[in-house]
Length: 310
Image (cartoon, rainbow, N blue to C red; front, side, top):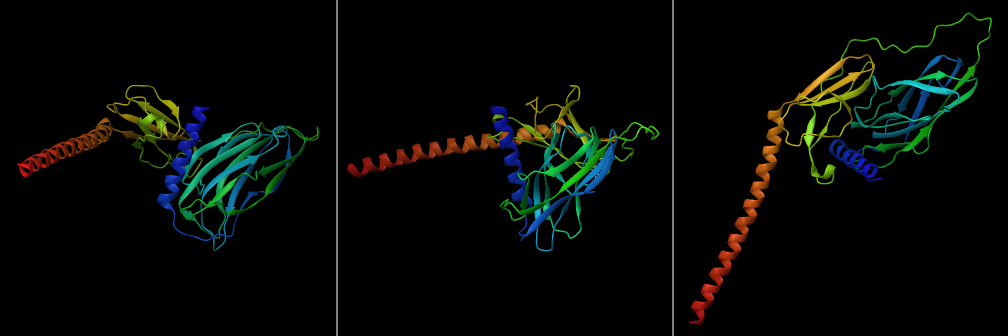
């Protein structure tokens, strides 16, 4: 429970921080989230591509999303997803799939206000069983206005339908469905940030990182500290080495297997530690100086008082 509460605090604090940092004022009416195509006729064991779009009007400006999508697990299996070409720039919560519920949280710094539809996510469903499969955006999904307050926007939600049928036996067998992302462009460069706060991880150092891949989309991140092997990681990441005296390597890997490596050198990390130490020393020195001044003032006061009495 404590871990979940901490994760919620981290997500909430990080979202609030970015919303305040990037928002500009804007008015809003209703934002529409919809699927394309809205209806598909499919055969069992086939993979179908469904895209999720955002449509805004002239007078609305939005910048944050929490999207929860429900699909019938008995009829469909979510084989893959991609955030390639998404208008979302930063991911507060990495996309997660859990047996019939697919969810993600992200923001667009500076807001989004465009008459053209904007791609949020691409989903690839495998048809499992004959029937009518309805893909819905749940009512608890949220779109936030770009008004520096995180005000929920009015929203219009639609659904998609996949009609799954068993192919007739006389039809020739078809190739087994596959998902191959073929491109050789790595994720975009990014700048990881070392930070710490009393409210998170007990005041220990953590790493914040995020990037984009406009083609196949980001698959996962890996982190290595010093000579340690790479391990799968998510932002924010609690650093194992709190001394910050080793290089930190962050690797972003897209769906096609292309990589982008960024390094936080130990020298740069130590500068942060040194800066924190200097700040602490200044605080302690200031407190000591104040104590000395108080005692000196008290001494002068008592001395003057004695002189007056004599």
